[in-house]
Structures are given as C-alpha cells and as structure tokens.
Image (cartoon, rainbow, N blue to C red; front, side, top):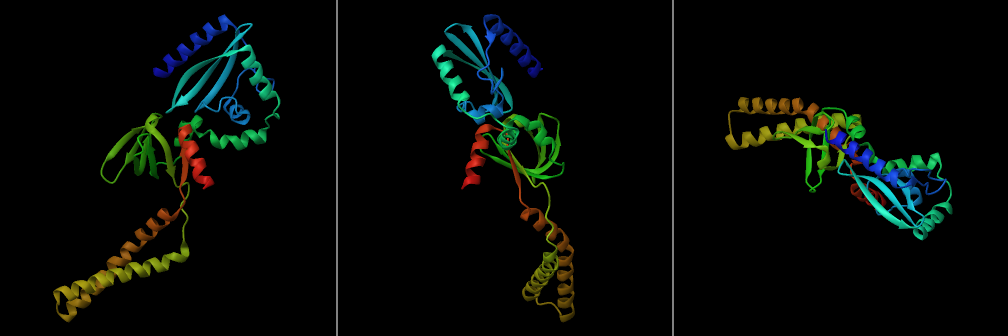
Length: 262
C-alpha cells in the first residue's frame, strides 16, 4: 500500500515538473536519466547516498532543476536541487570531458550497488542458513534464517524466534558454501574421544569408585566423545568457512570498502 502511494505521488510530481519544463539530458554520455553506475563513474552527485536516478528539467532559460530518487533504509526518497545556467553548463562540461562509460565499467561498479537489490540478495540466501545481521543501531543479530516474505526476515536465535524488518538492517552476512576439511576429521574424532576419556578420568579421581566401575566410566566417556565428534566436525567446518557480506545501505557499503582496503 505504501509503495503504491509512493509511486502515485512520484507520478504526479513528475507530471507537475514536466508541465513546468522539459527534460534536458545532462550529456549524451548519460542520456535523459542518470543511473546509479553513471553517477558513480562520472561522480555527478557524490554527496547523494543510495542514488537511484536523476533527471534534469529546464524551468526557464536561466534555471534548471534536478529530481533525484535515492534509497534510505530500503525505502525510496525524493530530492530536488536547483541549478543556474552557469552551474548546469559547468556540470555538463565536467561530464563531457570524461571518457564514455563501458559495460566493463558498469560490471565493476555493480559491486557497489548492492543496496539496489536488497530483496534479490536476501532471497538468494538459503533457508536454515546461519546468518549475522547488522541492525541500523549497530546491534548484531545472529541465528538461523527461517523465512523471508519480502519485508521481514524470521531468525531463530539460541533464545527465541525474532522477526526483523529489512528496512532496519544495514548489512547481512552468511556462508555461501561450507568448506569440508577432510584431513581434520580423524583428528577431531581423536580429540573428542580423548576429551571424553579425560572427563571420565577426572570423575574417577573425584569419586574413587571400584576398578571395574572406573573402566566403565572410561568406556562411557570415550563413547560420548566419539558420538559428539560428528557434530563437532560439522560445527568446525561451518565456523571456519568464510562469510560473505552484503551491504543493504550505501553508508555500510562505504564501510565494507574501507575494510577491504585495510
């Protein structure tokens, strides 16, 4: 309902602007509408976080306006800025002096536009996958992803099931694949069996039972250790597999870029 209202308002606002003046292409290199990749490549509006699109309109001979659509926490917003003829011409010359954006450039820049595909990114994450989400108030939520209905992500945490709206998230991380470390398998089985044996020995020292009972505890502890080895092996594989992070807001995208450069 909110989305329908937004697009209705956007339509009438666009209609009102078009009645005041016609759309003026900033440059042949960007066409009548500036897209996110072009905005980054030509650094037209570097101050606008979450840029989606931009269009210039000629209001009169000496005045232009640009309508900018941008995303803020998964919601589209509108902004408008006024330019004099001199300011518009300066920006136009600035773009014209640069080389033309290529498909290769667009492909490279696409990695910085995750926030435009929030729904697609979240739907690509398999259910029952361990995820870590960064909330907009900097809290981190970890658990198993149970469901996603386009607006809310349901997470099973160790304590309870919680429902998190996507517009409250800045980043989501998950493991796209689990790397199995086969050479570690026998070692882990040996370590868990030894751990079970050591615990049983500690119990024998504390209780000092009969000799036959001591051997029973040793056998029992070793068996429990072996039973837990498989789950321990799976847990180790999961925890040591690399996580992939997606930024759901432009500001978080900047932070991820800084971390990669460090």
